[in-house]
Image 1 (cartoon, rainbow, N blue to C red):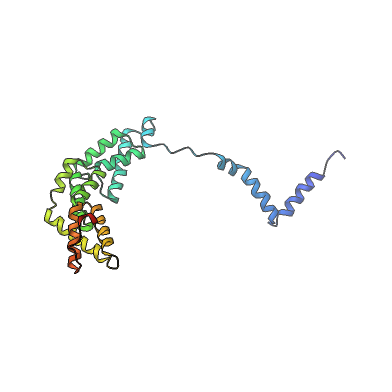
Image 2 (image 1 turned 45 degrees about the horizontal axis):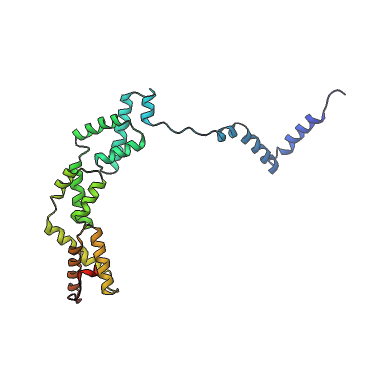
Length: 229
């Protein structure tokens, strides 16, 4: 009489009742699992991953390890796309690599020609001019954005011939004018001159090139003035 049989019987009955995989059994079982070990994992916040600089400072990795990790990430970046030394420095700083280690690795890469701002600048000048029709001013602006120093940029830009620049601008003006044949002449002029200016052509030269392109189509241009730019 001293033993209470109700609760054990209820427990056995509960197990039997839910053994068939009923919806209620799944719900209660799910709550048990979530409130157990799984719930503990979900409630914990993951600590932010420590950077290479932080791990080196804490003594978790050696300097040689940091150098190797820096070397590997730079090689991956250069495999994806050519970059200037300044671009690499900025990217690695954002990723948390030690500045002195980055300098050491980039110095070595410069010695073996893997990081070469002069060659990189020459490539930018050549491709932007031939493929995109950019003028000297437009290319110079891109070189600055990419961290190329002024002396290196000036030397790379010397490969641009003024006659070639004008010819590229003329081809671009013709394309721009051809695309807008259905529009009014003033609108065509304004859009084409604006597009050329954004590519680095001086406003006066851009207007002249657009005028020539219109004239080649048989449009009257004698009454066009520079003020329509």
